[in-house]
Length: 193
Image (cartoon, helix red, strand yellow):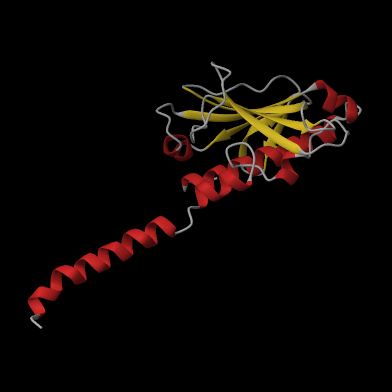
């Protein structure tokens, strides 16, 4: 057989194999989004750290920050992830806290009495709110043209009631949630945490 006639079929076979390999290769971003909560950034265990002390499976809803409608794509900024606990029967949910991803040309100022996030991270913690500033390279890789990006955690009152308004306990759990969220978003978008 003429070797020149084998070049095109051989090239087509190699190209088809490459396309199949790419389409079947696991995508860490999609895997994390399927396995975790809040844009794929929180494991269920960590997401459940702040809770009202009652039973129920931890779940989440990601909504557009301005529209209040469910977000189906991979958008992070401009959305709010509300972490909930299922009531018995699974038909209604109790809100535990909200994790909001925002961008702007400035950063949030820490309120009086706030604790620094520490550990090389920029941000602050209070009983009801916590903020972690994302690195600039992550902000751009996550699709924003703004310079600053933040994760804002807002703790709902029933969680604080369960925690007996213990600032140390709540802020430690808030810190863990923010750090895991930032680290997993950095993995998804291949940027520095």
